[in-house]
Length: 116
Image 1 (cartoon, rainbow, N blue to C red):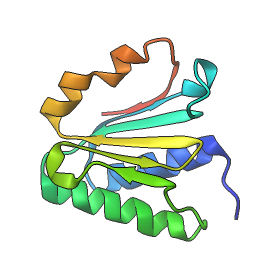
Image 2: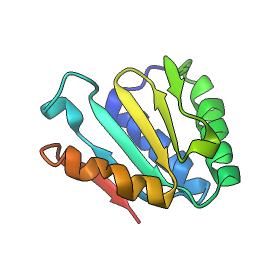
Image 3: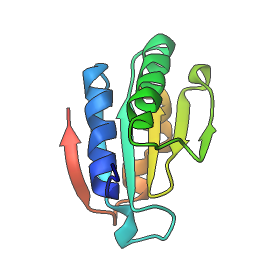
Image 4: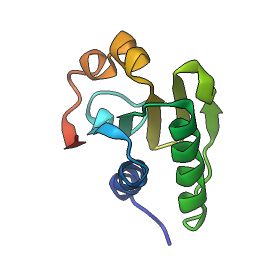
């Protein structure tokens, strides 16, 4: 089954929500950059939760034959990035998310979805 980029972003957001991630945002970065069509940005409260979120995203997306092209950062660093080509996932701890403030950096990218 082939997923369109927006469907992939929504699937990822749902997985993060199921694992109790918070402040989940999908940005339409394709309108302002050729880097990716969408960013999914979320906050987790602990290293254990970050690992659970990352693992579950990878497990759930395997059924669509989607594997991250790259994964950067480690659970203990405060920021994990999963690059699925058209969709880039950013999992942050609260302090690191505040520090990098990607929503402000990508303020020209329309918000497609926000889940608190």
